[in-house]
Image 1 (tube, rainbow, N blue to C red):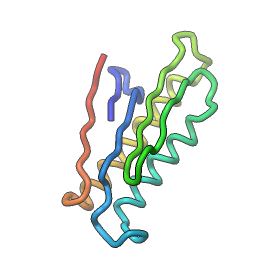
Image 2: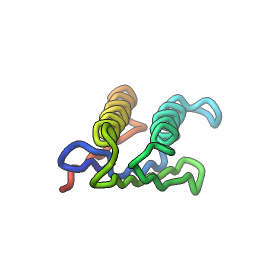
Image 3: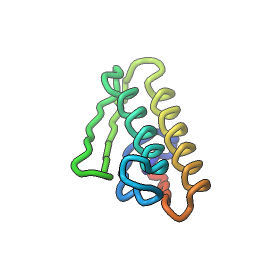
Image 4: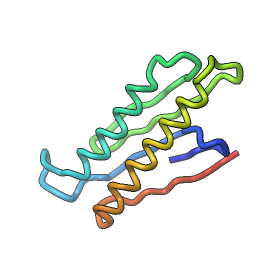
Length: 109
């Protein structure tokens, strides 16, 4: 996951987060999938935020965001909150299931 210097969510890539349980009942896969898809759906259609992404393969997901420099009031805060939610969620899953979930959070300008 990449956050900019203000904490705004720039991108996220998820891969290979299954393995903690049988197919269809893997709690780690379910948690990571729900976190990712919830943020994606929440950001979709949000004024001032451009969102690209998809799930090209099982266990894989990506998203990238852009925000207009003159975006509407609240867009920056909304994208920062999405980044905070997603990073806290991923870190929580990783702490609970360290053998099955690793998180890398980068901060870029």
